[in-house]
Length: 339
Ligand SMILES: *Cc1c(COP(=O)(O)O)cnc(C)c1O
Image (cartoon, rainbow, N blue to C red; front, side, top):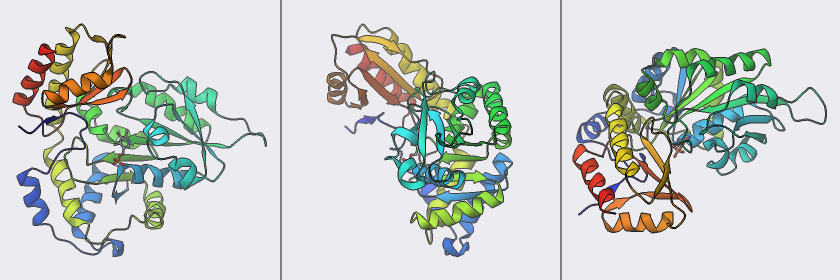
């Protein structure tokens, strides 16, 4: 029996309809900006967020790193949460690519407040790095798919505006937040200087992310993408999957959230579970009691045909996604009940 893979929402395979759209894609050389499918995807994403332009990138890591490179100068300081993907999961890219350093803040499930941001801004003093960029993550991966309160983002925006800081959103799973909070993408477009959205997570594309922002910023980002080796040629076959996903795979994220909540309810009844982070979207992070080891539980789950990740010695993570059906969710719940 093929295992039920809850390790990440990146494991999805294209659906037959998505593959069909990919195979029928019109393509051209995207470095010449002549790939109609890439241009269609970029136009669609820009319109969706009410921003001027967008840039198709091979990965979310690259689109975040391009944004950080464009918004900073070497020696600058980037403010983000201590478990932010841009900081802990991008191979030291902020230092490597942008030559900038990080001021990591201790947030609440991956989220930082305007007050914290304000307190972290360095004064104009030659001893200090120049604070130039704030990065938020919504939903927060290590925060267990937690969502920002829109009012707090507005306050962060104000702090950035008052202090001439740029504000970037790592919106790898922004559509999960939009669906869960019944929010409009254009609201985010007005609040951020740039937004990166992953197409390869819950939206179900094989690869790709999209970076969205003002036209001048995207022009610079296109140059940096080339420098990073991310200028692709007939990328339209992949971009067509992105167009398909934006049209067909956004609303259904609610189903992933319902599956995650059902799994949470099953976990809550189990003695080996010490605590579960609030489940707001498609990620479930739970802690095991002292007498248990997260890796051992992951192995037991694997033996029962369910793949999860032990993200630390005492924490496990499940992520629901496009390839997890209601039947599979029921099976996961039965296995949890049997542990
Ligand atoms: C997955 C992810 C990214 C980018 O990941 P890639 O695998 O490089 O596409 C960025 N930020 C967050 C929060 C993520 O979860």
